[in-house]
Image (cartoon, rainbow, N blue to C red; front, side, top):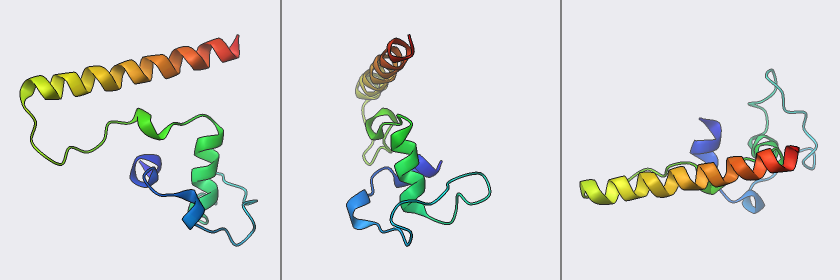
Length: 86
């Protein structure tokens, strides 16, 4: 949930007290949002791969198209990751 809630934030406006060198783990993950988001991006998470919150009600067809588009992005990213691991 952290990534979904914070992905829209710009890292350049955030700051880290320790110059971006915080150790992000299960015990210290709430200490520095900047380093936690940086770690998410470093491990390959992409801001455009989560389904954005819908602000306006869509038609059923548009909603279906949005889901298909989102699913295709996820599959594409998954294939990129699997090929990079080979």
